[in-house]
Length: 169
Image 1 (tube, one colour):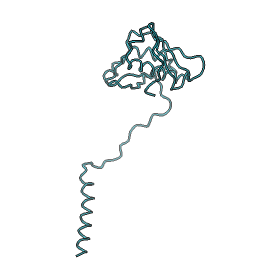
Image 2: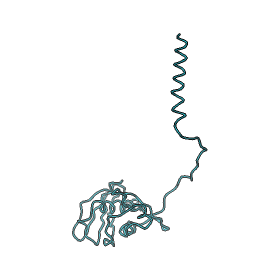
Image 3: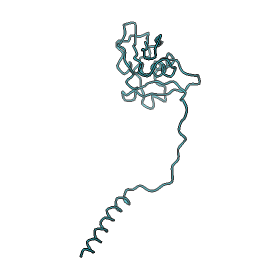
Image 4: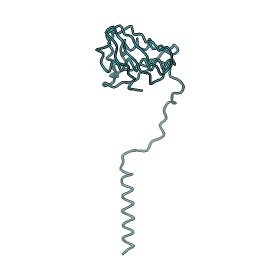
């Protein structure tokens, strides 16, 4: 009698292991290969745009060397390109903010940056301010001017916003 119970237990155990594995619905396939991984430094200007109110780093191609923070901010103020808009990317940085000039600190990479705008700084939304801060920090880090934790002060003709760090870093 114990032989039958052991046999039934083994059969039941085998069925319990075989049924889930056989019924998963995934068919075997050959190895799927992809393109090689990107290596080396990326070339481009990093801009922070918005995707559903979240900051997203977008790399715009460039043929020149390291972009200056001023270039990156000018591109940010111009807004998303058509292909970026078709992907749902937006910007809250007003186009009237151009030209934007980033002033780098005199000494020390941990010192902050000041971004001067031609438009008012006070009513900028949190998203717009974060876009400006993260974009200028990204460009200044690539240019070796500051480290990624540098605070940024946005200053307009109406006054200055308190210094803040990029929340995406």
